[in-house]
Image (cartoon, rainbow, N blue to C red; front, side, top):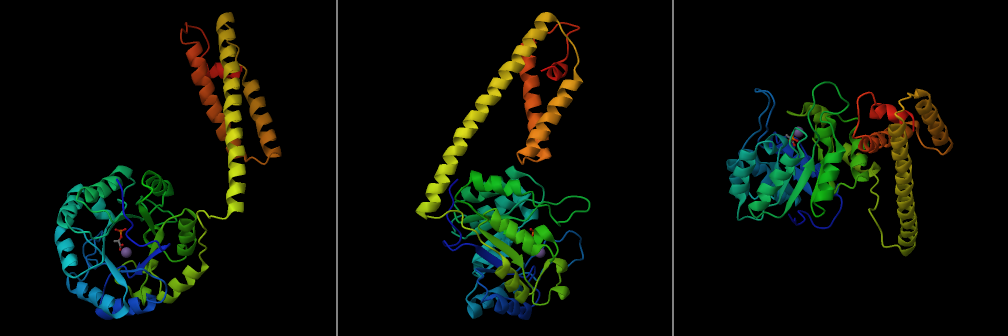
Length: 368
Ligand code: PEP
Ligand code: MN
């Protein structure tokens, strides 16, 4: 799949605005507060997917007129959530600039397909949030459905994953899934919705910085003129002023640079690393060769002497060496475990013609 940028080359892409459009005044006030803060897109939910019935479910179609006014009065582009074909048609009619598909919709291929069909033949940009559950294929599948409908201006939004029980986050970030997406689709813009990951204000800034450090293309942040009185997601929204303060604290580090000195030094270090990696693999292979020899000797002599002392001594020696070389005990344990596992596999091959009474492979390791 190839994608076109939803936004021009400006980085980071900044999306901010209230969780829900509540009143015309609230939307316009939020937009006015964000207009001069470098925001690219004003967000506001018009149809709200709520976990329990009875919660505020959005103002519906009348709210689209408010977003249209935001465009006219502030020049900001606007985005809202579409969860079915009807929403998509309404948003097209009112000139909404960018659509997003919410986490509860991405989980349902029927709904995503219905939206993709409704948008076929348009060039509308669509942002696809990850599904609520950590299912990478489902996320990619939603991107594919839109892509197959001919849309190219598609981006992804990482908003974390639900879990049961207490956690620091409302939705666990599980960053690796977003990183995997970036790596599989280098042309795809991936934006981090820090508000829905955090679910609370006090860890928003640190989470946004983390997203920047992981090279996300942009941020989505929920901003409300009076967060404590918001009709949805009260605990995670911040004021436009707080948004401005937070954004000023964030540090955006360059992914790379054209500076020749930088490039030369990086190149030197990288070629040294490559050479060392090669040597490391060679050394480990030599070590495995010895492990196989031990397996063969023991098989030959039918020796099954358990030597837990040997393994303990080995572990201690490695830990001591690790400490001297500024390697963490956790790393040494992981390393030893990986080598252990591979040694067992290698010895298993040697003693495959195992006869009853011979030592189990894991015992053989203890003798190496
Ligand atoms: C939202 O953006 O307000 C929203 C409902 O988000 P999500 O789909 O990520 O839960
Ligand atoms: Mn919300």
